[in-house]
Length: 527
Image 1 (cartoon, rainbow, N blue to C red):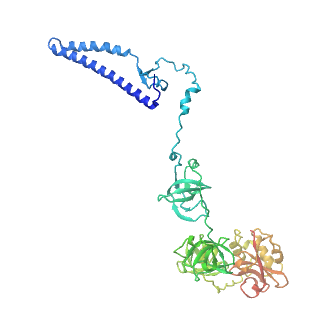
Image 2 (image 1 turned 45 degrees about the horizontal axis):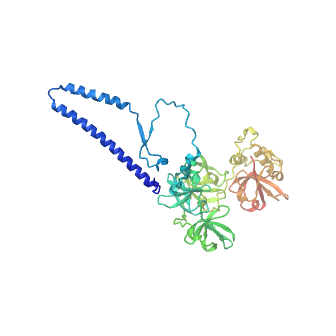
Image 3 (image 1 turned 90 degrees about the vertical axis):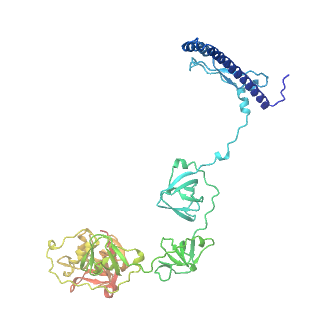
């Protein structure tokens, strides 16, 4: 009676041992037969070395092994297989052998019949091994910084503090993603956050990165509230710097940096400057997160500017009515000696002193605030009366319509006659003069000073400090109530106009006296 009390493992061990013994016995018998045959041949060859020629011995060996080889080729090959589990318990000690399929088997031969479901019962009963956790772990993805200087932050957003910068080409390993930001690991093992647009990476691969979890809340914003009415916003951290504007109480300021007892701030309209820390109300956990700087603006910068165009006129005074002293090349550096309205008093590299319009100079705001104001300007020489042109053909042709060209065209009529109702070189009244000049540039004004003051012809200007060369200037209550006189602004506070029958066409200054008292406003023509 077969004993089934042993385990399947004991039975498998017993079967393998028996099989090994059988294989060893076969091998031993085969070796013994080979040794016997070899010994016999050697014995006879030794006994008759002289009787048989060597070639006979060789022929005999060939004749012996050829039949053996033919016989061996007829034996079918077989592959020993492990004994099926189904027969493991029957106590048999024989081997299971499956023959190799013959070479003549057609590839189109019908396949085996489908196996019944019961054939998979043992497989289905086997336990399924779980994957190791490390095989499920997401692998980091390589990326490279492409921005010239990328800000890295402590969280996924600009609300988080900046913790450093990375230059272009810096390699990173991306760990996770969140809302357009990537969590990355640096070489020192620390983790940072970088905006997606600052990186070069395989987007298709990056989509497989996991979403970041346990993201901390952003820290409190780095802002302060103005605690005192009229707080000075200065252009540097100290009372020696220039005040740019005054801030109302309660104004919210972004805190950009700090230096000693001063904060660099930015107003809601984007203006940057410095304020004293003691006049700000700042919440807890903010001050220590504001970046500390060690360099501050120079209190006494070089007062210089660069010419922004080629062939810029250097003039003898602050306006196009002044004589030209020379021409300046593009990017010529000029010392800034003073400022009068929209003109700078300058000194060239050769030492020549003159005036240049601020529209033709590149001067940063920090320097411009330090250029001293000029209160006295050169007197504008009154030209000698010229013979009046009799026909339009004798006048200089009207050039392209620019503010400078309008002024230059108008200035050639200085000294012309004043004629009531006149609107030609034969004689002008005030509105006839402006009408004639601007007609040459395609702007048709009515022959009336009050009628010319209309937004139909341009933009109104109220403050005389905002006037530019070429603007039309209006005066009130001169010989009658209301707008009663008009002229053309030429810069430096000067207006060219048909003054009176006695003075004709001339230039007067707005900066004091009669004309300042009667000034009303201006129109900047749409040309």
